[in-house]
Length: 224
Ligand code: CDP
Image (cartoon, rainbow, N blue to C red; front, top):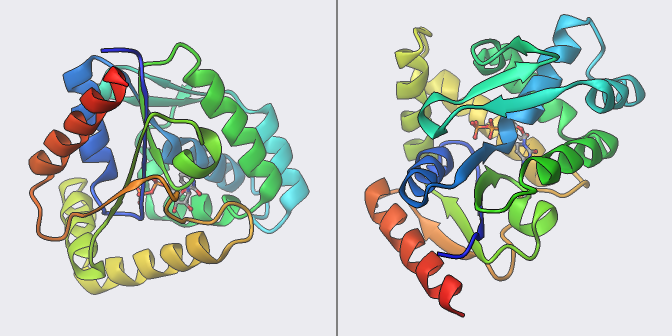
């Protein structure tokens, strides 16, 4: 198959990363988790005591930091200035910080540049909030995944518990709602479906079925 760019957007818990990793594995593509880059910027702001509201300073951090993703989809590691921060970027404070710094236009510009550079060789699956609308508006395959808030909160709650965090579904639900609101209401590339993205509601659909559907779309697109 030609080296396509596959863009997957949607809110937290919609199944983006599970589906994205599976597609990348099946096609032998690079998987790029764009959220990990925003999380690394948020992590750095917290670790350097930079106010999340100080747009100029946070943008400077985003521009000057080295953020790299290494490893195959099942063993993805995130490095910030050469340090493995794969665990620290998933902590609740980093989840919150990532969605705050992601509202800053200059931070988004710096991250978009990094993401395009990471995908330079083609043959990539990238997931996030603005991949089909901003990072790769010409991606050959665009998916927009969504699911009910209850289903998304349940999925995320299971993941958090696997990581050892003692959380309730209500707590996760509140965190997701706050991040959804920030992602959808920001002026800089808010979370919206690209007009040419295929919308898939994953609330009642096994993620394997979503993967098959995406692969079918990719096969069709690579022949045209
Ligand atoms: O894993 P989850 O879907 O909860 O979040 P993530 O993909 O790791 O992204 C963390 C945060 O980064 C999101 O809440 C968004 O605010 C932001 N983000 C973004 O604005 N644009 C992207 N392309 C990816 C993430």
